[in-house]
Length: 123
Image 1 (spheres, rainbow, N blue to C red):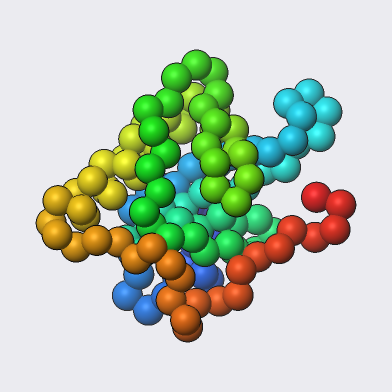
Image 2: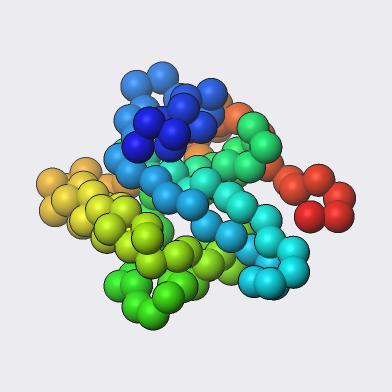
């Protein structure tokens, strides 16, 4: 969790708290993959790579993972290895808890949020 918190820290808004996070990848499994850090906070889902972050609404449900890799769809399809299935479940449980407390998560980024991340050309 320390690595997740470190990667999230530059992208958190004041008072925002990390709930959990995990590593995901895109690309062909054997040839060229790109690794991303997916971070669930109490306000957003952050997709972090190379120090840049895409901020998405916190209303994302990742679903029950199965198999060796679980596919999640955010701004693109990501594959999450089963080593991180516990973290996927924690993210969904945290969202469920926020909803049950009648505190709906924000569906859109804050107007003061950092600009969305666009991958460098060729990624």
